Length: 205
Image 1 (cartoon, rainbow, N blue to C red):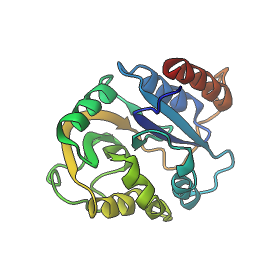
Image 2: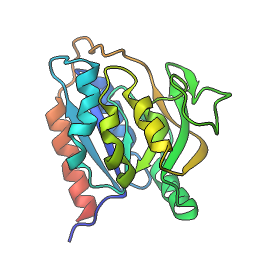
Image 3: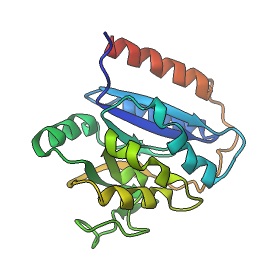
Image 4: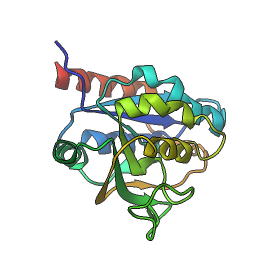
């Protein structure tokens, strides 16, 4: 019987295959790979409202106990992310875990706003991991044309207990919805997804 993964990572993709490969590799390089990596692909550029709404629309695909949004132009920089997250959950039993990282080469959450309720513009979607029950309850809050991540985490904070994890775990160069220029990559998105799914199924068999 296949066990449910500890963590579900949702990755929204828009014509950035090189960055997507980097994102996938950063997940595969985790010391603890108790993860399912789910992909949401936009091949035409439907805009931010569509992209944010897809977090809600794809909630039924989530099997993990915890949920994390890591877009295709983001990647993990800490290979012990999943392993240490497990330890935090076991020791502190939070509903939300806030972590540190770099967005467009700046530290987020913005210094001075650590250990405070969410304020718009001071943190982004890679800064928080949430328990599945809380994610399901408030996923519709993502459905905004701007700052869907903020509206979601603001709502989640009203109902959940947060643990502030003083660790830099991700890097997120802002692409502002722009696709990459033509690349010589030999694997398209669907081939990478199938490869990762095969690895995941082997891990959880």
